[in-house]
Image 1 (cartoon, helix red, strand yellow):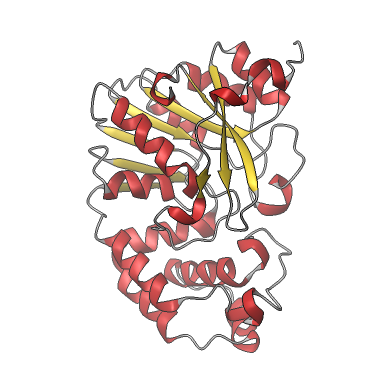
Image 2 (cartoon, helix red, strand yellow):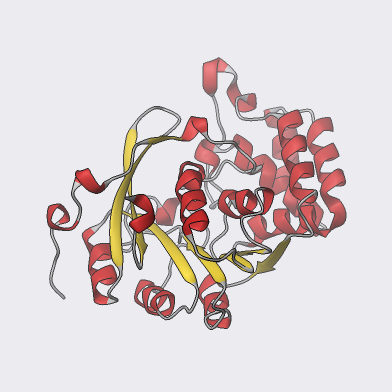
Length: 295
């Protein structure tokens, strides 16, 4: 398989304008490593460019679910299917969408956050799914970078010296959780393997898929550090994606190995830019059948 030089694949003149992540509405209760809030305007433009309104929008690696939540909130598809393999993250979605959103919101609002109280919560195995959901939200909010994988340390100094409370916004979390609950008739959640779900939905023509695996192809960088599930068969993912009867958009790290897989499966690539909350400019690779909607 030939190594394709990045400059031969992507010219910056083809990139869309830089998206500032701070300018996009936050609907998810998660601080999620690799979260795709900044991609919302791109996905919105892509879906609106389609010749049909999807009967089903599938996010097979949902994570914090910001894309699927936006699709549901803005009625960009009839139904949304979120899929997540991580048991902790799945517990949050199942709790919110399964009738326990009010309980979870109240637990968050009433919790007195200190290092001691957080340690006490984490010292006890959860006795129910909703308790696991609360532990997950708590850890996601007070761990460095929102990391849920084992071994993540807790925030010490935090933003503006606020320490462990620097990312803990109880009323905001309550509002987002209850907001998601209000969309539950439009959203289905499945705890499971994203590739398996793609195979199950492969023949559905009036579907749209946003595919954003939270792992790098070469196994380096953040994947193994950030995620409890950090291995995936990228070759298979590309093969299955290319076989989908519906429309799809993939998002990946900008790596030569990814570009090679895209070319092998006769897919088109486009490099796009974003600014994170620290105003650092980053670039991500979008993969699909065509990008006329970006021109």
